[in-house]
Image 1 (cartoon, one colour):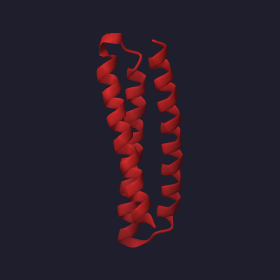
Image 2 (tube, helix red, strand yellow):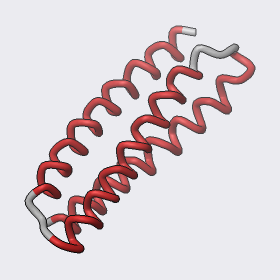
Image 3 (cartoon, one colour):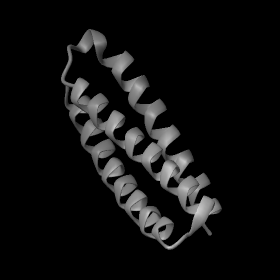
Image 4 (cartoon, helix red, strand yellow):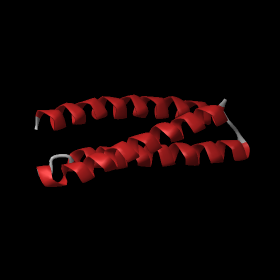
Length: 94
C-alpha cells in the first residue's frame, strides 16, 4: 500500500510540472498569429485534456489492490503520452 501512495504522490508532482509546462506553451501560443495560433491553441487544449485525464486516473488510484495494476498501467501510459505531447509542442512552438 505504501508503494502505491508513494507512486501516486510522485506522479502528482510530475503532473503539476506538466501543467506548468502547458501554461508556458499557452503563453507562447498567445504570441502567434493566424493559422499557427489556431493550431497551437488546439494543441494546448489537447495537452490540458491529457493533464485532466491523468488527474482523473490518479483519483482512480484509490481503487482496490486488485485494480491497482490496471490503474498504474493507465497512469504510466497517460504520463508518457502527455510528456511526449509537451516535447512535440515545444519543438513546434519554437
